[in-house]
Image (cartoon, rainbow, N blue to C red; front, side):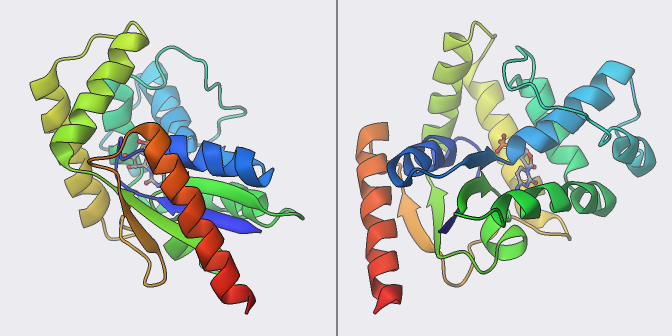
Length: 210
Ligand code: C5P
């Protein structure tokens, strides 16, 4: 069974995707981590953000370290959103995501273009969203919990800029697939969002099984 979870930054898609993976006993891939790893690589080399060629070279990342303290920082989030607009960077990371999606037994992937590009034939697709203000509050809480600096106004500005870039880019922009189910988490706690996500996916699977 293949489940695609897409949505903007801090919408709750990561939490939901992890919970769906645990519930259905499926492996999970946070595809944003791939773009973040490229961003971190480029930044550590002192590479030129404005150069698609240098960003492509930074795709040569052997492994993603999700525990690297910098990988979730605001500067890396912003660089990830910039390098992800380069078509050659997206193409370089596509195979890895498709292979993960096509493994026997299925998988859960979360990102921006899973339901539209990486796994358009997914059995269930969720598009998770929330207001920019609520997403900024969540992001500030998460950064502070990780011991990273965070200021609400800066984070809100950054989230809006990332939304614009992710939705406005030419290749694989963030958009809801026609057959994706919308889940608005603005007024939901994480637990409520997870319960609703499981209910929606189970309903979709039951509907397509008949
Ligand atoms: O999901 P996360 O916020 O960690 O992703 C970081 C950045 O990577 C996003 O802002 C987006 O620009 C990019 N991304 C993408 N396609 C994906 C996953 C992430 O373009 N499937």
